[in-house]
Every structure is written in structure tokens, then in C-alpha cells.
Length: 201
Image (cartoon, rainbow, N blue to C red; front, side, top):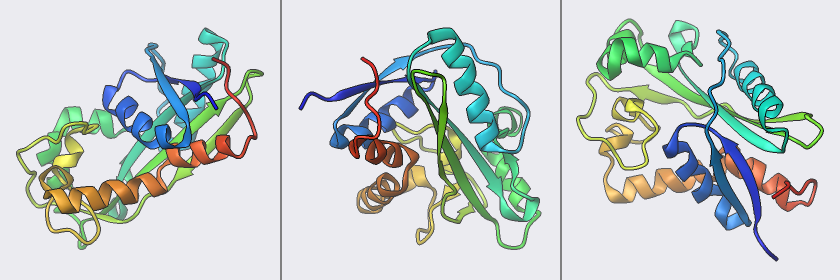
């Protein structure tokens, strides 16, 4: 059976690489489309992702996916959430660490929402609330290949003692495997594999 192809609307090549890694084993190929999309100011990751997906469909007029991520510190009410890109630009990874200094547990989590738009413009979200992580007291200085953002230098996965970007090979492999099992890309790929929809090519 020939692989299916889906258009992923994003300017983030790290996300494209991750999507391809997670979807290729399920027989789905990814092609990137870059569009300049407006982003609503909302703490709801799904609302942001759906808004972007609907914009992208109006431009391209074909089935596609959009993924939006959020990062929040639990004791700060999930702040900054989907606005993490702006918070990182203003504060940097070290600033995120200083925000966590205001909390007792430093507990945080990534959230992710992938939105698929079919040929009729109907949206379907796939959501991953993410596992609890911890914000490091100081960011690591390295940057892992394929990292989506500088957050990888400050977020410590559950069960680990150093940030994502500083994990050793064995821990990094374990985290990658666990992420693949839980990711919104995997959810989407499994849904496709059940034969519920076949994207246009």
C-alpha cells in the first residue's frame, strides 16, 4: 500500500521532522507548507490551533494539519500556555526558570493539539495534555538536534534529573519512545490507519 501524504502547515522544521518520525511508521508521509497565519491570544491551545487550521484551509482549500503547543507552570495557572513563544522571546529559558522560582514544586507540562481539516473544511482535534515535568533551576547550555525550542534546555522530564537537551543517549531514547506513543501525531496516524479518512495527495 502506498503511503498517504498529509500537508502540515507550519514554519517550524523541528515540528515537521518530529511529525515525519512519528507518522512514517504508520504509513503517512508529511509535506510542509509555510503560511503566515494570525494567532489569537488565548490560553486555550485547542482554540488557537483550530483558528489557525481554519485560516490555513481558507488559503489552501485542501486537507491539512496544524499543530499548536503550549507550556504552562501548574502553580501559575498554566501560564504562559500557548503564549510561550512570546514569553520565551521576552524572557529566554533563564526567565522561565526564574518564573518557576515563584512556585513550590516547579511542576510544569507541555500540552499539544493537532487539528486535521478535511476536504469540506470540517476540523477534528487531537489533544495531548502532557505528563508533569519540572522546570530546572538553571537552563542547560546545549541544544539537541530537532529541538523545537529553547524550552528543551529548561524542562526536566518526569523521572529524569537534567533537562531534555542534556539527556544521555539512553534516557533520550526512552523519552523519545514514550513521546511517540503519546503524541498527537501518533493519535492522528492511528486514526488514519483505521481507515476513517484518506487525505488527498
